[in-house]
Image (cartoon, rainbow, N blue to C red; front, side, top):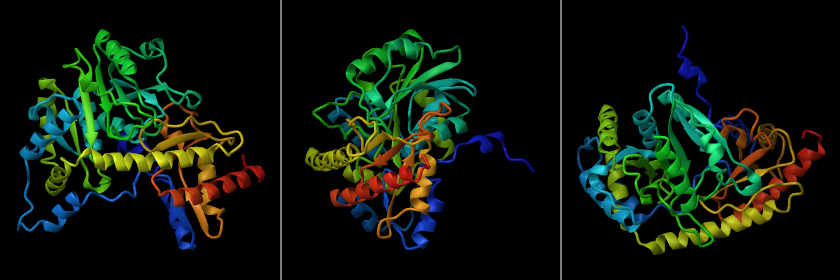
Length: 399
C-alpha cells in the first residue's frame, strides 16, 4: 500500500525532529537546556488556571463553530485596545493560530496556487501549505541586515499568475524582525495593485522592544477585502497548551467560507476558550513586566553570542527568538553532535537548526534559531556550554 503524496512530502519539524537524540541524552543522565522551542517558562496567568480548576459542569459540551459568543465579544474589546476596530462577526475562534493559518490558506487559495512568504519563516508554514495544497514562494531575507524586507522589486518579481497572497509574520518567528508601518504600507500597496490577499501572523504582537510599536494589517487603509489577521493566545499568556487562536477579516465572503471549514471541524476547545476569556482583560502592567523580562533575556543571549568569533547576528527587535549564522557548514549535524557527543558536567544545549525555516534549498545550513525562553541564570549557563561546544566542534575539524 502507498500513502499519499501529501503524506510523503510533508516536512518533519526541524524543531521537534531532534527529540530522539534528546531522549537518548536524557537516558544517559544528561541535563538539556532547551533553547530549541518557544515554550516560555513564564507562569500562565492565574485567571486562566482558575478556570480549569473551577470547572464543575457535568458535561463539557460543544460550542459554536465560530467560537463562544462572549469570548468573541470580549475579543472585540481586546482588539479595540490595540486600535483595531472590528465586530464579533469578523472573528472566528480557531484551534490555535495553526488552524487560523490553515483556514486562511484554504479560503484564499486553490490547490496549486502560491503564497509569497519571507524566509526564514515559521517552519510549520511548510506543513500548513502541504495540507492546503499551496506552494510557498520564498522571499529570502538575510541575517546581515536583521532579516528586514527586501525592496519592492524583489517582491514583485515573485508574483505569478498563480499568486494569491503574501504572508508576513510580524514580529517574526524565527527572526525576531519587526516590520515598520512603512514596510506594511508598501506590501499592502503591492497587494492592492496585484489583487492579492495580505495575511499577517501577529502572535507575538505584545513582544516588541527598543521603543518600537506594532503595526497590524488591520490598521492599513483600503485593505478591507484583502487583510487577513491570524492570532493566538499561546505566547501572549504563556499558555501554549491551551490551543486557542483566531482568524479575523472584514471580508464577509471570506469569513463565510472560513466558517464552513470551522463547522466541518465542529468547534474550538470549549474550556480553553473559557480560560482565554478569563484572561482577556489582564492589564498592561502584566505585559510590561513580561516584556521587561524578555528584554533582559534578549540582551543576555545577544551579548553571549557576540563572544563567538565569526558569528553573524543582529539583535532581534521582537518575539523571543534570535537566528545566528555560525562559522560551520552543517548546523543540523552540530545540533545532533551537541546532544550525542558533547556535555559539560553532564549538561548540554538543544537548539533548532535553521535550514528547516527556509524553503530555498541550501539556505540556512550554517544558521541556528535560539529561543530565549529561560531565566537569566539558566541562559548564561546554557550559552557558556554552547560556546564551549561550538569551539570543540570546530576544533575537531567537523565544520
